[in-house]
Image (tube, rainbow, N blue to C red; front, top):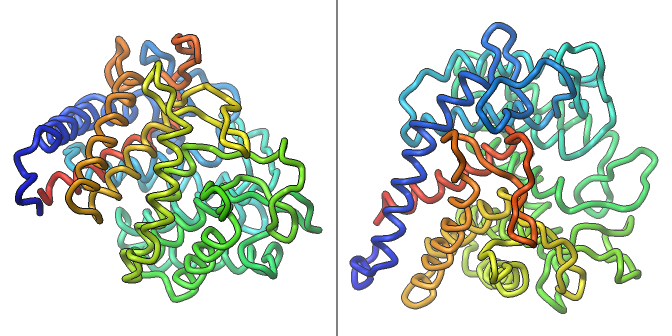
Length: 397
C-alpha cells in the first residue's frame, strides 16, 4: 500500500492502464478467441487468426506451445474478470492437447497438422516446459482430475531427468548431448515449476525451480555486464566467439519478473533484487528504441543492437518486470518502476490498436511499419499474464 505517493499522476495513470487493458481482454479478446480461435467440437486451438478476425483455415501446423498458453489464458482471464464460461473449453482443450501432442514417452512433440495426420516429433525442452505448465494450470479448472494431472507432470519430469539431466544443473536438449545449451527453455521450466508449486506438486518441483534459479544467477548472467545470455557451451560457459553471444531484452525482463516471483516465495527478495534491477535496467537502457518507445528483439553480447524488430511479447515482459519491481521497491525507485510500466503499457497498446478489437499486430519494424500478417495465438498468454500482474498490483493500491 502506498501512502505519500498514493495520489501521484503515475498511480492514477497505472490504474487507468489496468482498466483499459482488462476491459479489452474481458470484453474483446477472450470472447473473440473463444469464438473464432477454438474448435469446440474437437478442442483444437487455432495457431493464428487473420487480422479481420476470421477463423483460421483448417491447414498448416499448430505448435505444441499454443494449447498450454491458451488454456492458461482462459483460466487466468476468468480469475481477473472474464465472466464467460471457460471450464468446458479448458477441459476439451487440455484433453485434445494431451491426446495429440505427446509421443510414446509422454513427452511433448513439436507440432501437429490441423487434421492431426502430420506430426513434427522433434524434441524441444521448451515444449516440455509448456506441457508441465498446462498440467499445472489444468488442475485449477478441472479439480476432479487434480491428482491425475499432477501424476502426469511427475512422469514427464522423470522422463526428462532420466534422458536429459545435465550434471551441472538443468537439462541437455539432445541425447547424446550437443551444444548449444539454451537458457530460454529453462526460463519456462522455472515458470512451470512455480505453477506446479501452486498446484500442490511435490518437493521435486521446488527443488528443480531452485536449481534453475541457481543456474541463472551463477551461469546464465554474465557478471561483467549483468546481462543474461541465451546460448552456452556444454559446460554452461559462454561461447568464446563473441559474435555468437546473444542477449534478448524481452528475456531480461522476463527473467527479472520470474526471479522476483521465486524470491518472494523463498523470502529472498533482498538477495535477488540487485540482479533483477540490473536485468531490467540493462534492457531499458540498451533494448528500448527511443524512436518507437518499444523494446527490441536482440542485442549482441556487447549490448549493441542485433535485431531492431520490436515484437509484441517483449513489451508485455517489460510491463511485468516493471510491475514486479514496483511491488518490492519504495520511494523514488518504486515511482520510477511505475513510470517504466506506463512506458511499456503505451508500447503494448500500440500493437492492440487494430480495426478488429481483440486482435493485435506482432512485429514492429525499425522503419515504423508493422508486418502485415495474422495475429499469433501464442501472444495471448503474454498479454494475459502482463494484465494479471498489473491488475494484482493495482488492486493492492
